[in-house]
Length: 386
Image (tube, rainbow, N blue to C red; front, side, top):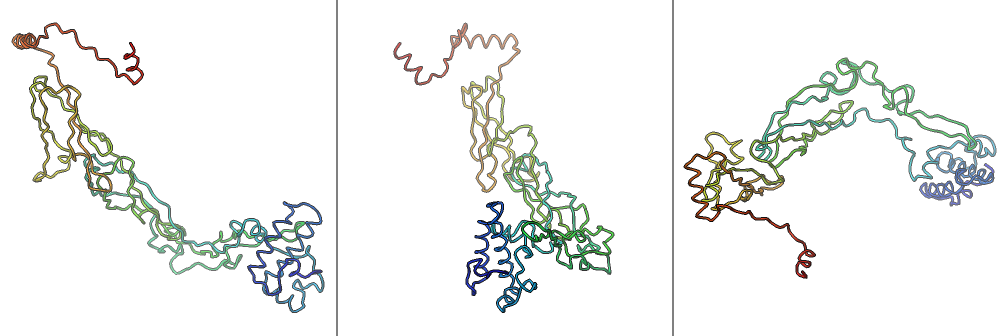
């Protein structure tokens, strides 16, 4: 080299490797041809790159400090002849190694993918929890090679192309000099090893597909769309790698009596006109009746009081009779909507009795009541001025 590499990078002779690297990064950002295309700047960039190649290599730095030529060219090798890594340039601009560069052989065993299955449970099972047997079809570790991918009596051998590094170097010449790039080895696909005799059962993948049965515990309070995670029960990874997770997605079909509204349950009961007028008490089955055993001592019925004069569409709220919260024991409410049934067919005696009731209540020829819609603040103010 025609100049002192320490002077070119602006570092002292006892500078540490990190200090030299930071100095190179700073200068490379300023002098790179993509940033500053001036010809004199390009020559300066070549000098900086050559200086960094010397000082970043402990052997070449030691040779230079002893007075030798680190490039073995008996004089100034010049920046044009100096080789430098493309990774160093990317490192200068992005603060780290280029993506996919210099990582060494990649592991053959890798984590498997997560799996998703859907499970239908009834409303009562979703509300109070249930344990189900679930059949799943996933990748499992090959029982013949135990995940190695090699046939019995054989084993993987070091790749002769990359010598176990998993990557090969490609050198290209450009106006910057020799640019070295690292790529995955095409012979071993980046693993650093080759399986000369793959396992016949799994074709060298280390895993096979199998159907198995799992026990799934569905917690109380789940709803359609809820996913239950089973850690480590998903797909086994290539090379016998660790398994991913299995997610069980819940679907709850429509119930014949109850509809779900968050943690509340809703249902409708129909009572005769006379019962709504006089009042009565009806027995309503609870959701627990769907999952209760025959000899259970659970309270499976609840009394719903229909107060005298109950109007059609009115609601009765039974506290704590709904769905449990997913992460607590607190339950929602059961909301009962009362529908009043008007009789459609009356015999003579029934008509006579209703007419007598109408005379007693002065309702022989009712005009009906016209309800006004709810008025806002401005509507009430307008009526007040009128």
